[in-house]
Image (cartoon, rainbow, N blue to C red; front, side, top):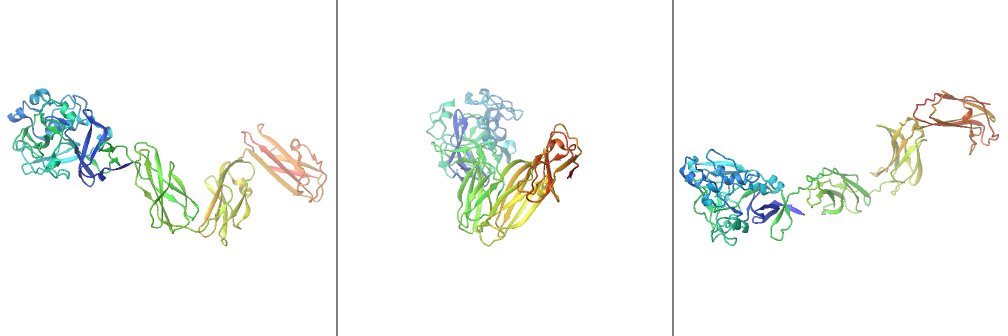
Length: 567
């Protein structure tokens, strides 16, 4: 799990485990909190380097001998903000500028022109997270005095920021909360800073505080800059080409960056560069009925890093606290509404595979309905192809006595909705949705029969039956009452020619009104021969009937009319 960087106190230490200098992970102190960002500075001195190289052709003899103390033109400023490769981070910032090579640094100590730019040591996501930092820095009187404001991703601290006052009357930013004492200004070099230094002073050791550069120039001089001393006070003015002072870079991160919930074994919180998922776009549900299932859905979330997302669902009853009711990998959850309480409210958040959480999306508090909705038997189902008019049998029940059950049957037809029937049902009774009256109106393809039962008290349930009307089979039938027993018939279909890729079958009967009519095959006699009935009995009235079907091929068929003659 993770927490906001802004939650850490001043003085806490953070690290990004893959951001290293000289092979060691860089540790950062939380130095100051602003409303939207956090200021960090390295916990220790990470290297010894010069502020700026000697400028041998500079008109100023001081800068020829000591280097340039204007921070915006310094080598250290350029190196700190470069992600270029080894030996290519440097480019001249003005006509007199020189690189920090052996030739131009004091006693050939700690040159760094051949290093990679400092930002090349950062993880890409750490580098991308760095905020632009605008800072006012005093100008040497040689450069006109006053101040200039520069914007950088990373830089050295100023005299004002470490609590050592102004320079030549210039306030350089604001004092950081961390630097509220001399002790807090003390800095120790890392073991790597000591081992990599070409300077081998006896007081340069990981166990001893040491000097480090500030971005502030000594304004009345053109080649010296301010330092913090080994005692935490303002150090001696030092020529900027000298590479025997330490570096403590500083940077800004947004307050909503994440760190681990607990520190690592070395006491540092780990910066988490994986970003949390977005806030779920919506949350919705139907009426919450006491003791009944309730489907809750969300519009979903996305993860900037492409991580797998889970949804955490929580519920609150009345003025109670939210309690987790489920975790899903999908954007829906079915809750069982409690059978007590007055109001029901749910919320959802997204969590990625690393435990990063979005904020909650919260639904409105709605009244719990203690009316029991009606029930339609069966389940939503798909029946497949139907060649004959669909007839679906179902039962409607309602546990609440005395309520009026109104049932509506509809069927889709392309983009239209056809009303089949609406009626008042009796709880516990069986009914049939019969699509015969509308069957011929339905297009070939998929349709949905929807049965809705409403109890008039806010309770409603639907049942959906999906099917395909299959027009590859054409069927028709007709029965005619007669005064006496029919013994012969002649059936004609117009047009009489049918495609060769179709299959035709026809039957006739002379007792169509009996419980079990006797059907006789007349397929081969259509349009050409009289059929003589074998059956000679009719127990439920006289009559004659035909029925036929045509299984279509790919060719079109048109049946204009059927003609029946009998005797």
